[in-house]
Length: 164
Image 1: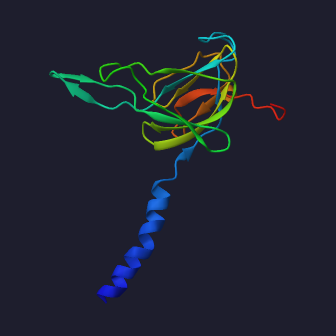
Image 2: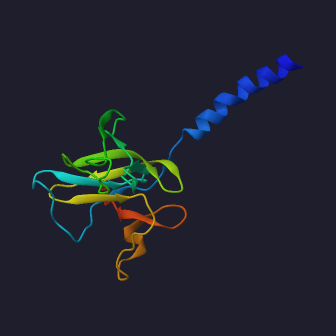
Image 3: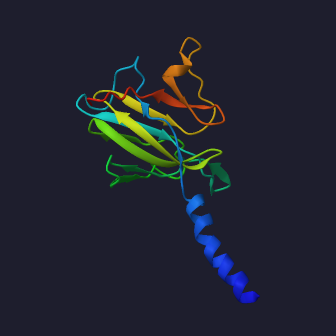
């Protein structure tokens, strides 16, 4: 009986682990179509407002954004981003990237690990907002935005064309 229970647990454990490690996949996010500007005109910038982590120092609490990874379209790890300058820094890092499509894997409030395709365009900044609270202007069409399953907005919908 004990052997059967052990074998059953060993058989079910990999299934549970594989389900737990599968990130939530969101729709592609791109730059704000109404704003131009990045750190370099031939590059694009990426800013990821990932889930905050509490850091306690000298009787003060800080909430820096959690680290994330950027992958190429082929799934190769391109860069791991330390998403703050110091543990007291609550602003996300700005990363310059060549124009193209990438995949960001980051921690999101309420969802854990998420995978989001992002489009980087020259002289534009793509913002991925994985925390509730960002509200676009009221005149923005909801079809132009990407939402998490619970309804909070995570960024601008990428304009992915077949010939890009």
